[in-house]
Length: 418
Ligand code: HAM
Image (cartoon, rainbow, N blue to C red; front, side, top):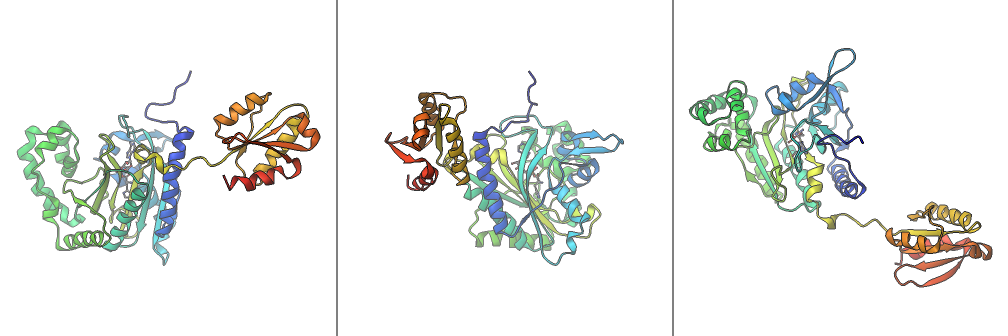
């Protein structure tokens, strides 16, 4: 037997129903906030991700599914979608439009991580990207959309954490101060962090190793080293969130695992998830479009992990399947009549089914019960000859005869009253 791949999950119908709730809510609210759907490819040139996400990030260093195409070029399964959306924005010259360019997407992403609850190698994201506005109001809009989606799904125990990484010009001064601090703590840091002190010291603040976390507890805060403009931007974002009644927690260590961020970064966690507790996260990336060869374009977005949202989605948020009618047809004359009625019901938009293997009434009724049918239409040879069907109410067990010609219509109208 061939097994599925580690960290790559099948989505069986029960869980698919949970995903549909999340996806429907995401689509509906994205439209409501003026975002339109974009679909970008699942694989792109490796360089796109290396340049966008950053060469010294975990994702690029060790988590990408990279392979060689037949012509020798290096391709990568997308580990996230922001890079692809930014590339499409540049390639299709979408910045030339007079209206704001705001997109949402849903789809699979791929990262070679160690699988555990809520962490997969193929996982799915709902995300949004808003291009063109440097205003703190754009930050407030994006964060409030994220908060609205997660709240409307009734995900329990949510906390929104927020930070500012300053703009590119703020970094060098802070990096110097941080490096001085890290050098004093070097003994306590893991090999990886020691190496990163030379490449990208900010990444050390994102290290999950407990000794590194402890050693950097007192690290100088980026928010204490912001330029006047960055500080003002951050304050306006926080003010806007307060205005909308969105609760947040300042987290000066929130540097995020991708290098393209500038200014605002944020993450929403659920205390009902285990170690992998981030349901959604994002931030501003004002330098990315330009770094990829496009015009200078401010931008901000977020992505939600669908698997993680589904893990904490309350059962009550998933609607029941809807009423179903079962057609129990048997006998040489009964079966063709039953097939026609089934077709009529479906034409009328009534969710209906039958079991082509069942040959007795008893077997049919058992299946109808399993499927949770509210009504069963029984048609044997006798009924077919008389031009009738028997309607059985599965709750009250009452039965009555109906004329064949109007049976489907009559069941359809009864359904709305049970
Ligand atoms: P990210 O923080 O890497 O950001 O991922 C966003 C969310 O995707 C996480 O909060 C988590 O819920 C989910 N996720 C990430 N990795 C996994 C995994 N291995 N298994 C299951 N779920 C996972 C980004 O991807 C950015 N592109 C977000 C963004 C959009 N920033 C600006 N625009």
